[in-house]
Length: 257
Image (cartoon, rainbow, N blue to C red):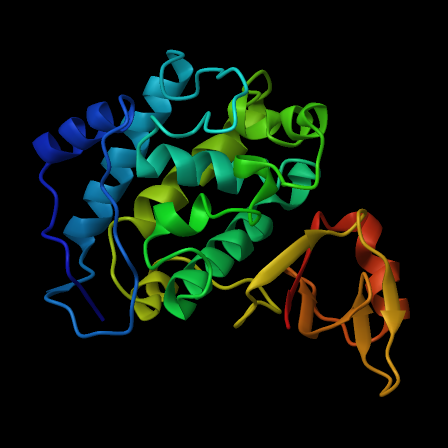
């Protein structure tokens, strides 16, 4: 297991942490190609130090600052802050499941970067692709008021409780990890794929979709036939009844189509 970026020094972590708050990028693309450096304990120390510095900046009100809505409200943010806000906002409804949900969202991002059909081959391009992650870009079919509401959790992260702070800190750590390694195998050696999560490229809020059955007996989500549908940490669901039975206790359903 290798990675292409040079191992960060503590000083470099501080520089990156500062630059991420003023819109500079530290973008990385994950791929299956051979890389240069192993995932080492030293690398993990640097990732943890970077994440800790950003969490401190969040508590101080800089990294997690509230941002007023505009169609490109995210454009001045660094890559690590965009990823943090996306991972956090896509999973905040049911905070008791945030660890599995965060990791599932991270794997969807990894899968999309590797796939290449979802806006580009970097995390920034995938995260900000048109009509993809509603918490970042909104949706072209929404009204402006709907997009203001749908992007609110990302634009105005709530750090008022110990649970929300823990969820935000975890999202920071995952974002730092994604930008510090270069392959899916590196990622899987650092953080797990929750039960049921494999190659999924999509997810939807489980309370915002309808489940059904196609002519072959397979599961449909909002009218589309899907495969590998799963709830993070629970596992794969193959029937309409199983999908419906678990919808109330899981934020998102993840799937491939």
